Length: 102
Image (cartoon, rainbow, N blue to C red; front, top):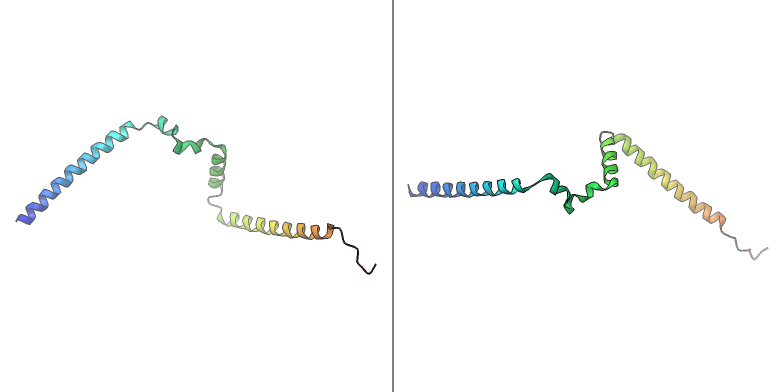
């Protein structure tokens, strides 16, 4: 019987602590104001136009995974080819040293 009493007492103590925490959280939530939250440094990045543009692009491309991956693959291929063409053009445009046989 003493074990049961100890457990009941522990349960009552835990319930009191929970109630105190609920009251504390309710008081803190009552202090929060959406207007003051936007002035904080944590949410200041929401005012940046590039963040909005990135979010818009993300929403537009959300359901088009296959198309996005295809585009990324083609873009990567195009950049690779452009880099190789630029390297070849640089080689061709370098002034050539006169050969000793001429």
